[in-house]
Image (cartoon, helix red, strand yellow):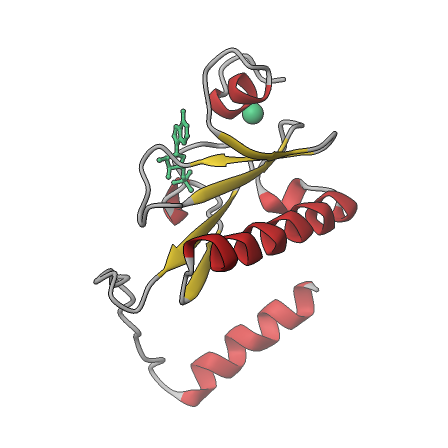
Length: 138
Ligand code: AMP
Ligand code: ZN
């Protein structure tokens, strides 16, 4: 447990949360600032961050719970769609540095639009160079 971490405090029961799922490794609870009502967070009980530091079996476990929550949101809330989001680092907009997946129910009429401003590469070579660089690091 990280004593300064708000999600570790939720895991430890030191601050309240509205849980929808819990097992020995994973907890899912309602986000207090929902993008859309029903917005749920899925976190490991262990303090792990960022995603690049997490052991693969834990990622697999988290993703299995993410899928279950998404299915439950579709079934119970009659969601038309689901967003799964995950941020790493301040540059990526992360506010709480404890690994978490946002599972957000979406409705045809919810009126929410992501600020997803697609840009362009300067030329095809620039994109190819970046692809080569990522491939080389795998
Ligand atoms: P992120 O920007 O990806 O780090 O998201 C952090 C999320 O945690 C935000 O959506 C917050 O609304 C949510 N959050 C922060 N504190 C709490 C809390 N005590 N209980 C539930 N959700 C929280
Ligand atoms: Zn933590």
